[in-house]
Image (tube, rainbow, N blue to C red; front, side, top):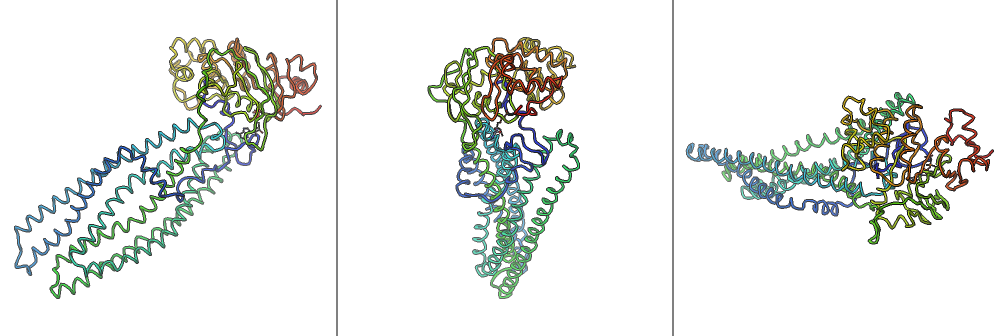
Length: 635
Ligand SMILES: Nc1ncnc2c1ncn2[C@@H]1O[C@H](COP(=O)(O)OP(=O)(O)OP(=O)(O)O)[C@@H](O)[C@H]1O
């Protein structure tokens, strides 16, 4: 295969809103299906977390190390309030005057505890960043690898924006969840237990006093997050919409400009933007209530501790130092409780992201080649369609009982109105889709009995809208044969008549092309595509509208290069303009998924049928610029 997914390239151009999708095909709805996008509620929290845990693989050892650090860190942190209490008591006149030597030791231990805490926190963050980045990179790798194995049908049924959002938004969500919530959860749990134990040791009565606020905290958090969860979900949906809208507007910028739709595009964007603004603001304001309210409740708790502690101190049942330590512990105790709501939200959106990633990973891949599959090598190039029927969806037949034989080295032109099924025939030949009934044979063998790789390697595509990758001209020509030498590249370029214009470029073959060759003319892009195919030397050629919308001189160059390329190769030409296919050995007229006429140009002209009418109609219009689609189906 000389191009990635070639038969689809020119089909994907997004349309301005309101314009009909060609043939009503799915895949590029404005606003995209991306709105189903990131965030949202996970369907199976436990199952997805277990599966995500599988990706921790070798990282589990490092995670144990982090856990050890967290335990040590928690112990060190728990030491702090205790030492502060002891320090206060060491200075207390009630304890028989200031004990300077004890104070000195306490201060040194306290300072070391703080330094150790800082060091351990840094180490945890450092190790965790590595773990989460490695896991996410491997997820991304798995996802991208999977995309390469999915059938063309998968991409045809979805907008690019949606597929992209899984690799970006969703993976980002997983990444921040892993990096932030893992450590927070582990250290939070340990801190809660540790502080509670210390509080109980210091004073069970004070512990009881401070725990009074915990149920209130829970109820408050639950009530507020229940409301904000819905808003945050809606915010993610609107963000997805906005992303889809931007993605489609940028890729369809030429169409937007050509239709003077800039103002419309802005006003549509404004609508989506405003929705995101509204819901975002609501979510932020509502969730903003939580913190101040929690602070009030926490402070009530501290006041209760101070009150009960004061009474106990007056009765000499505890010291001032113990009250100070206790208040610090109760702060440590409630902090992770406060974080819990955030972690929970983060976990939800991360798991929802992971679910969307796993959804793709679980998609059915292109079926494996059967064990007995042969390698298609030394292709003669005989192509037979034997009673082929096909529908993209079983209930909508697109091709009905197609029968033809293309002899090795012959050229076959497929013509017919738009949506007739010409591209579909090519899609079946390349096995982007498999036939519903009948069989397609190359050199006498059903193409399903060849390995897909070898089958696709035997095709070369030249499309109207050639896809070029960002890279040098040299790299682009080598795409179908990476091992080719510079000499071979130049030879292919010369045969394609591309050599002349390439040499004129300041950097020659090393000229870097912008994405999709935006810095070349359409004709030049096509000449490069021809060079690419010539270098790969495929046995069967597929030319789709290869010479339309190009100036006459370049067209002559391209025609010449194409004729050169077609020599000795079985060629299929899909063309709307009949002057480009007049010399084809066989012309097949396709209409409503059936071959309605077949023969050479002369034979078909004699028949005075559909083809003759189309040809005469174009001929009358002199420069043959009339599209076949505009020719009436009846005389
Ligand atoms: N991926 C798809 N899923 C569902 N239906 C599709 C898909 N691709 C094409 N179709 C439908 O199949 C029919 C034939 O489409 P096809 O692309 O083969 O026509 P065509 O003859 O090549 O048209 P054109 O000259 O406009 O390129 C159309 O009705 C189209 O809507």
